[in-house]
Amino acid sequence: MNELSPFDAITDDLKITATYNLSFNTIPFVQNGVGYTVTLENVQKNGMEFLPFSPNISVGLYVAAKKYKAQKPEVRRFLEMIEKDYSDVI
Image 1 (cartoon, helix red, strand yellow):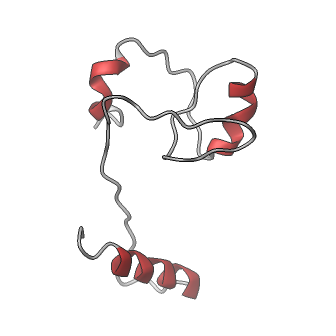
Image 2: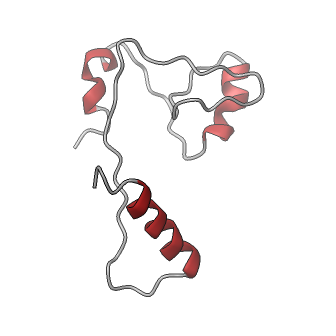
């Protein structure tokens, strides 16, 4: 599955040269005019500004965890919070 399939309308004109795990790591590249960063809404750091796509483009977010694996308390609590906070869409 193409990770950018919801963006097919705009990807023909894009030249994707890098991917990242932490948007913070892209700040020097953006600040030096090397490129742009596509990130989560309202992530604003070090003078960078969030500009939404227009029209709005959205994709689903999935969280997967092994059901019967012993989990650290922090992981268990995180999953419980997701289930509670997003029970209306799960």
